[in-house]
Structure formats: C-alpha cells, structure tokens
Amino acid sequence: MSNATLVLPVKPLVETVLQHGILMPFIAYSAFQLVAYVLLTTFVFPRTFASDKARSWLLSALVSVTSATLSVPFSVAMLRGVVTGTARTTDPASFALSDTPESQRLGGIFSAFLVMDLVVGTFSYPKQVQLVTGWVHHFVYLALMLDFMRHQICPAMCPMALMEIPTFLLAIGNINKRWRTEVPFAVSFFLTRIVFHLALVYSLYVAIPGYHFWIVLAAPFPMHVFWLRGWFVRRAKMYRKARLEAAAAAAAGSSSGSTAPSGVSTAARDAAGDLRQR
Image (tube, rainbow, N blue to C red; front, top):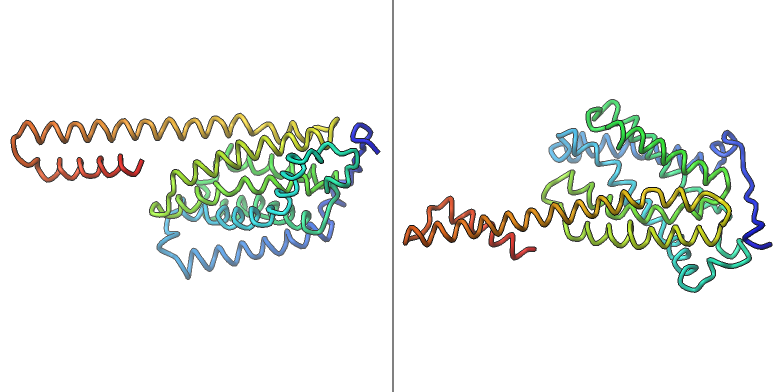
C-alpha cells in the first residue's frame, strides 16, 4: 500500500478516551501529580513554593522531564527516518505510525497534565492561569492529541514531547531565580523547537500525505521563531545596558581622580562581570 492511498482508521471519541492504554496512564499520572504537588508545596519545599508563580510551574516541570524522557525512542526513530529517507517509504508500518502501548502511555500522561494543570491551577494559583496561555493553549493541545489518538497514530505525536526540554529549564527558573539558565535555555529552544520541529513537520508531511497532521504541527512554528527572536532582543538590550553602565562607572571614577564611591564601583564590577558572563 502506498502513502498516497493510505487511509487512517478513525475511532469514536468516547472509545478513544476509554482505551485502557490511554485511560489508565491518565488516571495514574493525575493521581501522581496531585500527590507530588501537595507533598512538595506543603511539606517538602514550602518556602520554595510560597508564591503562586512558583507553584504554577511545578506540574510543568514534572511533566516536561517525564514526557521528554519517554519521547526519546520515538524522536530517534523519527530522525532516523528523515536522515535515511525511510520517512518516504511506501510501507507506512515501517515508519511506526501504528499505536503502541508506549505511545498511548505518553499520550495519556501528557493529557493528564493538560487537565490537572487547569484543575489544580483553578484552586491553587488562579491568577497564573491566563486565558490564552492557560485555558486556550491547554484545550487546543488536548484536542490535537485526541485527534492523533482517534486516528491511532500516537507514535507520530510522541516526538513533540522532546520539545518540552526548554520548558523544563524555563519552569525551574521560574520556581527559583537561582536556577535560571539563559543560554542553555536558548540553545535547547533552538535545537528542539526550531531544528527538531522542522524535522518533525517534514517527517509527517512525507509519511502521511493528504492528511492535515503536518499542517497542525507546523502551526506553532512561527510562534517559536517569534519567541526566540524576543529572547535575542532582550539579551541584546541587557548587553547594551551593561556596557553603558560600565562605561559610566569608569568615567565617574576617572573624573573624580580617586576611587569611585562604593555604590558606583559595585555597579561597575557587576556590569563588568555581567559582560564577562555574556
């Protein structure tokens, strides 16, 4: 059977949701999230999660490291297909499109996060659950995942989870400012949400022609480019500001003919150190 004549079966929505391979991971990971949230925010690290902002990123941190790890085999298979050209195979089965217990498990886990983040957020950090980035984003992604599940091609969706690596770095940085990693975040964002994202869209385009899945996955790409551009613009502004502060501190010190006041010298040292780090 050629890719051109490939017809994907479609399950009813209720039957899809009630599949054992999806429903059980959904229930189990929902329970895990609740237990982990209560333990970490109330008993283990109450000071770290004292603010609504820190608490709002906990579930994201947990699911990003979980889903990214589980997605590695699917991501490797997808990249191998792109590099070797087997993504164009006339045998769809060789591209591993059919559902597997592992792919359904990952789908159930990420679906549980999308639902529980809204449920927990409504009661614990309601001001952090925004309309667009919270409700709209989560429901759109939940609908997307259900579409893949109904067509029984979860393995084609699973590589998306690798793009959660920068989400983990962003999450821990918002939980604790000392854990922020600007450059590693930008590098991981570029590799996963730009380079890897393009490879994933291409693989679905050549593997399932005639279907909308590659278009749906391509839709967030402009937003990813916009976000990365914003990061570079912000870093450039910080760099210029540090240079101006360092120059001003040096000028103040030379004009006085003596050691600059402690406040100025401290600012100069901080600016110079910031420049070295960049």
